[in-house]
Image (cartoon, helix red, strand yellow):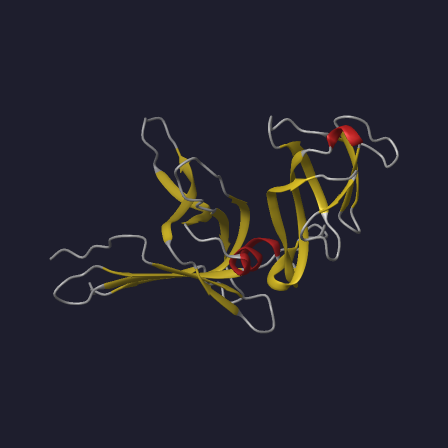
Length: 249
């Protein structure tokens, strides 16, 4: 059978600019794109085709596309920041029927971030105002206690949207404004093996990468597939990448 490769294979990124390298398997990998582009200088005489051609610089880059959301992978390849224990929990359309002019939301412990209130019947939003300025269709909120205050005209069924931080579950990536030139450096390893009578794996190791952009998009009836684009440069030993072939010439 011809020597070929099929599918996205296994993609692992390893942050290499830390005291202890951290490797992360990019699960559900969908795509790994690798591009190396040289700049050629051509010497012309009196005829149409060049007499000589010599390569100048090479620009190498790549893209990883995966169907997995990984804070560790994003931090190791793009942000280079730190984590804290806990995460923001979001609550949408939490129903309460206001019996007095105040209402405390269910998950108020530790404080909340208000994300709006609307009428349960019409789904129209109420307007947030400063405390003491409540009127029909207007409310105020104390974020530290999660207590909402309304006008007596709004003692009806309402839907509350808010978030609440909990240190008991998850972790939060804290992205801060760092100095120019500060970025993580990582290695990319790719491996695949087409199912053949004899094993013929194909593998690539890219030693030094710096991410240029990280993006993700949400779409109706589709999965979120983050994309990471990166540039490739040589390491201290002048190694750019190794490409491994199972067959020999």
